[in-house]
Image 1 (cartoon, rainbow, N blue to C red):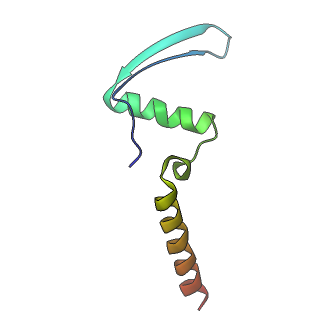
Image 2 (tube, helix red, strand yellow):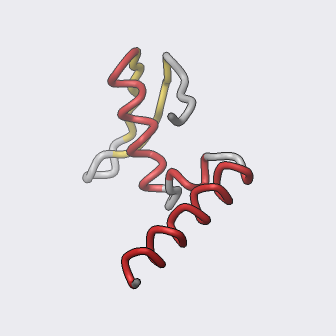
Image 3 (cartoon, rainbow, N blue to C red):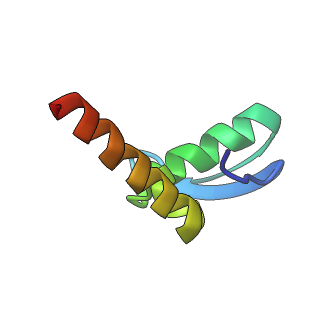
Length: 69
């Protein structure tokens, strides 16, 4: 699970270049933060600790080795 803020305020521009601001709570706030991660090029693996990342990498290597056996 990725930690997210319960409330957010974001500013941006629409397709016409007009600025806007939005405030959100709950699921919408979580969804906006998730989409912002996409725009910033962040992946879920970038959000986890290095220990969890290494555990995930090792698990994937074991699964790949089993699939090739």
